[in-house]
Structures are given as structure tokens and as C-alpha cells.
Length: 288
Image 1 (cartoon, rainbow, N blue to C red):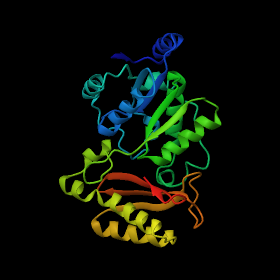
Image 2 (tube, rainbow, N blue to C red; image 1 turned 60 degrees about the horizontal axis):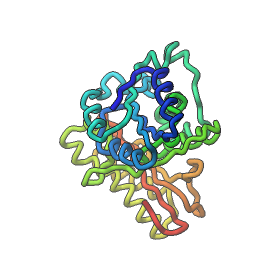
Image 3 (cartoon, helix red, strand yellow; image 1 turned 90 degrees about the vertical axis):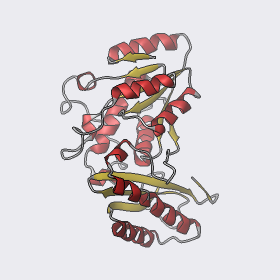
Image 4 (cartoon, helix red, strand yellow; image 1 turned 45 degrees about the horizontal axis):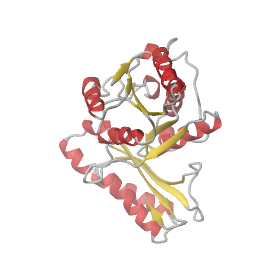
């Protein structure tokens, strides 16, 4: 496993590899790796000759009162896990490498329409930070395929749109959310939960499942279903941000005639914000 911390060095190194005919798969992360990240790496190995994983805690996607300073940094353990999977290249840039003139002076990539709803409404500027750094990383790595988890479905959809709109010629693949045995979506932020909060945390996904079951049974009163789910979460001890049913194509509010929708949820336990979603395909009555 080769570790590189310079964008210029990585681009040059991968150019030589590609000149020999190898294909490249890319998995961007912010480190503190868990089984969900590792599943992305395993899937990447099936899709290309060379797998590149980046570890970069992106300051541009954190708000003023968010957890940038306390976000878990576990680089050495992350490298051990990636080495065990026989990852080919790990890219570990610092802020200066990604934002050479400073975060505030860097060009911003904005994906319209998908960024100001759901988490975008609650975290202004967050998705501009995501799209900017992902665009930069994709331009550095120039992969054939890049893999992202479906836990943050809004992020996945906006990255797909960005790549399509900017004609970047990269295949973007979403990989199903990795979950604990009790249904909780795996996340680096789960480590913030107290023992009591961790016991309560799976209730978010259970409520999304309950809404999903009602929809597949024929109900289309989406607002009522989501309002009831929020009420139940509140009684469980959550501070809900939203539960909403949206079209997957453009994140517009779902209508009764829509077939490809997703139930999105975000709620906090104490200071820990959890997100999750449940996709629904009503055209074939199949779900995932």
C-alpha cells in the first residue's frame, strides 16, 4: 500500500499507472473508518485494477458551530485497516494541499436545486463544501469510477448531478448503507452517542421503515405519515430535524403519482445528529 500526501504527486503517480492500461476506482472518506467505508473499498476492488482511498477532513463542509475540531481523527488505525484490505493507494492531503490559497479564497462548486432542502436547509453551505472538495478530489485522482455510500443519499444525488453536468466522464456508484444488527446506519458520529443514546438511536430507522411500510401498503398522505413519525421520535427522546418523502430524481416533495421516492430523516440525540433514508420504488413494488 502506497501513501501519498501531495495532489501533484498523486496525479503523476496515477498517470503512469493509467498509461499502462490500469483502471482506477476511488473512495473518498473523512477517515475514522468503519465497516461501511470498508465495504466501499471492497466493492471498489471489484470494479477496477487500482483502488485509491482518500482521507481528508474537509473544513469547508463544517458550519461555524459544528464538530470540525472534535471530529474523530484516527489516521494510523485507518491505514492499518486499509492495508489489511490490500488497498493500493491512500491519499492523505492536508488543508494547504487542497486549499492552497485558503478555504475562503477557493473557488466554490454549487449544485443547484439539490442543496437547499433537507440537510441543506439545516446546514447552510454544507453541500457547497461537499461538492467543492469532491470535485477537487475527482480532478486530482481522475478515476474511472468513484463509490459513495447511500446513507447520505442527498449527497450521492448531488454528486451524480455535478459529474453529469460538468461532463466529468466518471461513473458514480452508490453502495447500500451498512448497518449494525439493530438497524442503525453506521457512521463515524455514532461514537459520540452515550450508551443510553446508542440504545435509542435505531428508532430513527424504525420510523423510516414504518413510513415505508405504510406507503407500500397504499397510503399516500405523506405529510401525515411524516408528522406522526416525528411525534413518535420526539417521545423517544430525539430532537427531529425532518422526516420527509421526496422524489429521488430532483428531491422535490413527493406526490401521490410518483414512483421512485425516498423517505429522508434527520434527528439529534443530545448533540449527535443522525441521518438516514429508505428508498422506495413503487413502480415494481420492490424496495431497498
